[in-house]
Image (tube, rainbow, N blue to C red; front, side):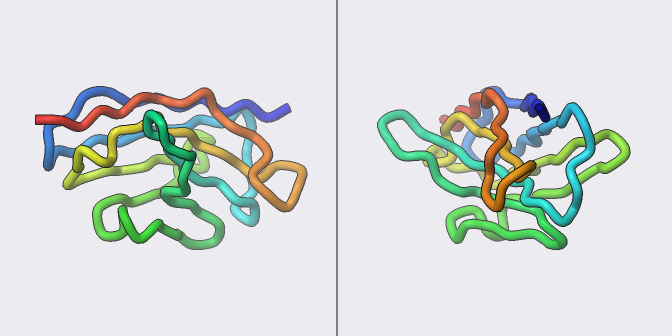
Length: 115
């Protein structure tokens, strides 16, 4: 099965920037969903951004986050800027591999935003 590994998390000051990466064990077609989700303590997992022949963002991160791919490295990135405390969460990458929905998930990487 395809494996996804996230990295790049850490502590960031309010207003700071951070870029996360997610590397797949094999190539994922650009026709398939490849995106980012996050889950804050005590809250439900929420959609952040995705790529599939284009980019898509949740309203809360639009204009601050950018998702892009490096197909040569089988990697998708999430570039974050203007970070806010509410962005604090475990960030997961996910991919559509064999079904019509996200069916493959990484283990997550922690992002903490505070003063």
